[in-house]
Length: 293
Image 1 (cartoon, rainbow, N blue to C red):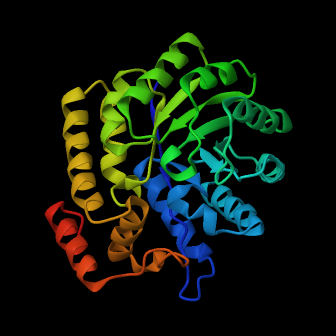
Image 2 (cartoon, one colour):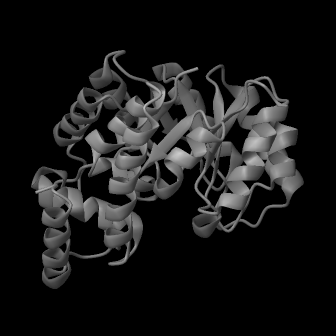
């Protein structure tokens, strides 16, 4: 089975902080042309800054622009199960390929509570649901044993692991081996190749916004059995990640790096990190160093 890459697409904004849908469509075209699939309304897409109505229109625009040329996953996760289900049903209507559901944030959940939450969402839609674990941002972690319980649900198709720990990713991959049809997508950009080699279905990458061709090249080489080339592309990916993320909060750094490549993507809604002239210069240096400018 061939592996696939999804890019956690940025949401583009105008100067007045309204969504720039045309610029967002341009980013979709750029990723699809490179050979990547799309995840929208994720962490790198500023989903916490988007209104309910904006998420629906954003998804409609992305699906329309993709036009069946790639797959689209959209994040429906919100703190309350009630609103998550409302959003998921809208995405079901639009016709996406998968619905990611980030763990509830702000509300502390038990593992039993997470099982009820994800099961209720998966029961409410026909589109396959993907668990989305990013405990550093939500403070709620999907334990591997919980993932195993949810893997038996007929409409839960897999998990996106953005925890950053190889140990947790290994545990999720073991769940996948024991539950055929339950896919694992790696979130940490430095573990893409390792994850593929150990049974992951693919990756969902934030850094791919700035390096779409490198990400696509890694996946293509792996699928072709050219591990030496896949390793070379992973080394490029990891080297840029290490340099860029040393400057600050990862999604903000990715968005700024992309902005310096293409100003049409705009800044993010406040209170996101404001542009800084010294930091911008540091990012420009990195873009030149890594042959991205």
